[in-house]
Image 1 (cartoon, helix red, strand yellow):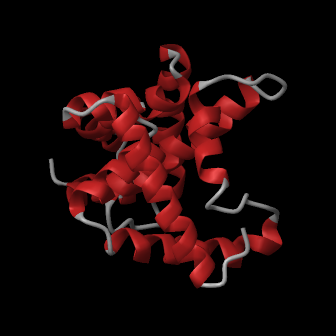
Image 2 (image 1 turned 30 degrees about the horizontal axis):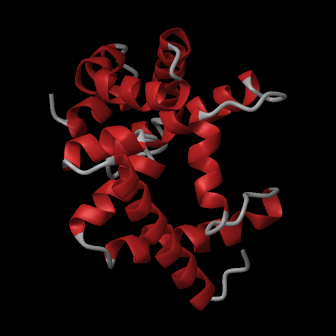
Length: 185
């Protein structure tokens, strides 16, 4: 079923919208949640929460990209669950990934900084658009979908050390770009 047809099911409050969403995007959402959480039960809970959130937001929201809309919801839910589960502990997976970005992306703050966050998002999107396709895809897979460096390296047929260096160079380019735009890091 096409995305616009699924969205119309949401607008007509037809519960089959949830079934169709799960059929088409269940694996996609579970993969994102698993990359963040690494615990299948928690990931499945986030996927279910994603469907619930989509049900509550559509209508009135009519997403331009249903896949991106669901991806954002499941990622945010997964990160929230991760932070709640590990509030007083330090774990390697997600902490490492987020700490890699600390040097080039300022931390999110309170509600007053929402406008700055939108501007930052616009800058990052502009920077990503200027990258070669391969670099853009790797950056998004690492820092949006949370994929492991070793998995990215294996798929690119390079060593994990080479991939780590590639990610470091990309982060440095992002940092320089943001500083050039006047973003305080």
